[in-house]
Length: 85
Length: 217
Image 1 (cartoon, rainbow over the protein chains, first blue to last red):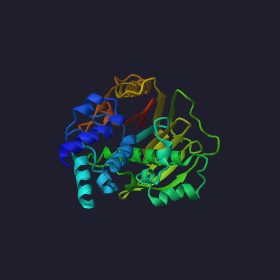
Image 2 (cartoon, rainbow over the protein chains, first blue to last red):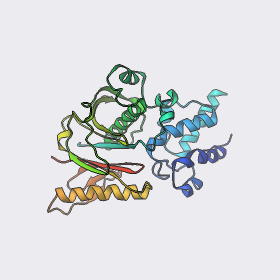
Image 3 (cartoon, helix red, strand yellow):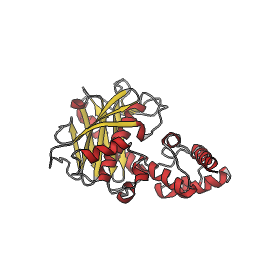
Image 4 (tube, rainbow over the protein chains, first blue to last red):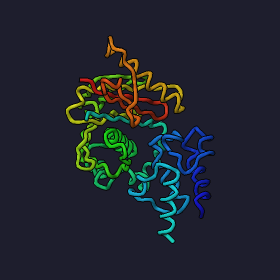
């Protein structure tokens, strides 16, 4: 799965947690979830779990804390998918 | 460095069923923290509210510490709640709408002690039917903590951000009577009450609730 495919998939994961749909549609790897998408921190666990379910992976605490931009979220998802394969 | 952190959780915005799943709460609570709920007298609040009380305490501590460690990342399970004291039964003091106060009566709030890295932090939380509000600080700061909680009509980010600043500024203008008080930001983007005073201010918002906190000696 390419980074672009994961980025497109992440847009669907993130969309329910922000009112700024335009920011989600135009997001890139530099986009920060809280600062740029105005996602409330209280939804961060939801996002981690939704990503786990979507990609059939498990994201540990050390990896979860690195997830604050789309790019490093993609890094973590790719790492976990690779570990699993 | 003086620092302060706060957090507010709108209980209308959380998913109680999902919160009760181990997959969810294990990303917030370590096993020994789950035991705090099993072993101590916290059954007056639901398990999901206990999870969000812990979240709120950890988020407030993180915000406090991030002010002097801007590169800090948030990992709830790395902040460990060591103890929680519960309020006296029936002592929930927060009415609906708008509420402000100075200091905390320990008989009215949940008091947590937590370690994060090599430091110990303290929190005070109100748990109501509609929100959980927490302030984190040093053990000796709470008598001088000003706090405010307000329910607003619109939960958009722009409205939350505007409302919480206006709410805090209204309070600040009453306290700093003859001062031209303003809310500014540090170089790292954290709110302070006019740079020369360098008094840290913490904002939080979730759903239709906003909150502010600052310390004034």
